[in-house]
Length: 291
Image 1 (spheres, one colour):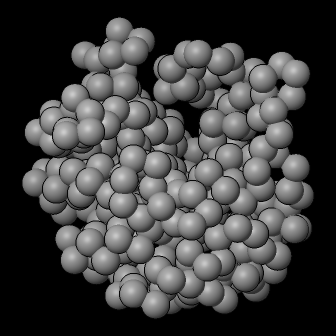
Image 2: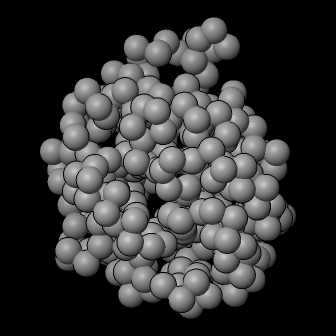
């Protein structure tokens, strides 16, 4: 997919993304404190079954499970030399699941480390890490890219700079925010839209952190400044933490879809679900939005 093809897809109406990956892997038995990416390599059929169900539910774009497969994050598991291998194999798993029935987005995210001057990570270090991962994703055959659950605007700027330097794939960018739209490491959703659309992002928006019932004002503000599509991929409400330390998401699929209709009316046009959602949530979105 090139940038013009993404524009044509987005121009044809609401684009339906997938739902959560991580929380569904946890339900399938993935333990805490390990590399999600490596676990999926060893349990590929779990991921394939999930992505097949997302496509049946109406997802037009599914995210390859390459979320933290960058050298900085992989150092936590002593796998920083396996960036190319992990990204290549994980995209291949998604290709086997999708069978050409949806686009595959090569997924990347925050390293969780703050950039200078507020942290020790330099822009060049982050840029190089993203270049390495994006090169692997592009070579593996990802149709497009997504930088999601980003904590600051400058992280997304680094991701876009990296992408433009190594490939021509369109990149979507989404930030996780507080209810007022501010990012956890700096900037805001509105600043992200204004800055990143000028850097040729394919779409900009928000994901994770909050439920759709808390994001109407943020989506509305972004859409008023947007020259490109607005992404909304929220959690299934705010989680409750049980006595085992597990996050429990209590917003049911129909209620979630009803609130997503509100976000669509507020200007979101690239829509899906994050933590706590599953294929039923996507089915309900498709039904409620009549897409």
